[in-house]
Length: 280
Image (tube, rainbow, N blue to C red; front, side, top):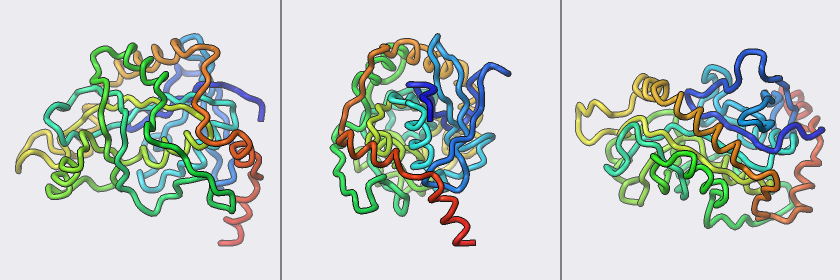
């Protein structure tokens, strides 16, 4: 497929549209990893061509544990994307990250299970160096675009779609997590496997299970979406700022051999549809 954009935007909860009406072109990108094409809108942001994908689909139709992350990342890579800017709603388990805080993530604790979390599972074994999950160049650009944001944070990624119990929340805090999210694993690792750099802006919407019974900031879906709506104008400004600042010659870290990446991108897109028909 002809390259459409080198910058990808993945919108988390609350960010389902990025362009003004008629300002973007929506395309369906077939992939080897899903019978349903990935729906991506290509347009201009900050003077740069970008490809936008809402992580949960239009209107939050896809639950966290059902997101087909391999299909999403492969689709963006097939369009020529080498840098991903993403947003994520998070709950806080650390008092230094109160609700309405913005944070630029730098570390991940993965508590998910059963998700398809690598492209290299079909006889092509590759080991991803992942000590620093997020791209350092993109992180610095995001920090510059959002000076009010906390510049570091460790996010624990839980399975979802339910929120935590108090015991689980205490466990995550004890493990060193500052924030909790349901979707960034395996998304960030998959991007790294295909040579795509990522930076994620986290929006703290709640205090997870809460500090005590009756905590008004304890996580509910209504509270999360309310806080996201409040933050959305600033989130959009930051995304535009980061996109505009990415150098034209930006080159992501090559953590997996280029030849292995090309083998993944060369997989036939008919495979997923054929598998779906055989299961029907």
